[in-house]
Length: 246
Ligand SMILES: O=C(O)CCC(=O)C(=O)O
Ligand SMILES: [Fe+2]
Image 1 (cartoon, rainbow, N blue to C red):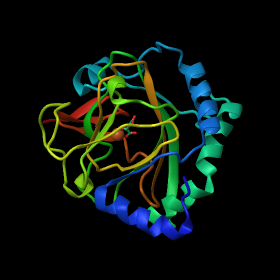
Image 2: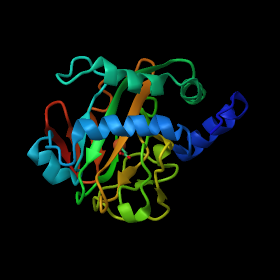
Image 3: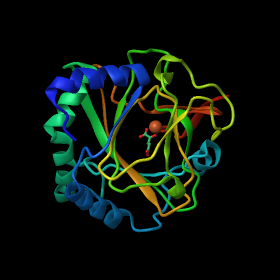
């Protein structure tokens, strides 16, 4: 897809109205094939969980994270990190990010999130607490394979919810009125505001994963996504602790 300077303003306006933006065919099939190969190679079909048991049980979220660009990780490989770096350096992605956040923004890290076949996906959540509207992360999600509705693993968002405050408490995977279901396609880029209510439907087909190049406005603490808001709790990852029951 052509992300031209001339339509950057329009794309940014759409993002700020809806709290998310989907651009199909952003990356080419050959680039996606290379990314897909590395991720499948890293995880295999049935990787082990790394989150605390309590989190997995309570959050109704089954993901296994990988931070391929983080040199402090024991499994870091500069050759693999290069692949992620080159996707992130794409000038169209850089320009679009700047159009949305302004010039002052900083990268967080990239994160691949893997979900095994037959698992629940991800419950409704906000990546960080929404009380201060100036403090948020921006997800820049890339999908290397197409997931049709029958495969599950669909991304569900609530349009405009980045301005609607805290996600109401309730059922973790409930269908909400006005929700929008995004079917990721190979090469799709999905931009998602961290305060936007979102979830991932159960994985009925093969395993699925997303690659997220997270960024935030400059001056945002780099642990901005440490506390996640679910419908039944607020959870802090660094201390593996339920901060609030809801
Ligand atoms: O895996 C996805 O499609 C969505 C991931 C997500 O919720 C996030 O990156 O914050
Ligand atoms: Fe999220």
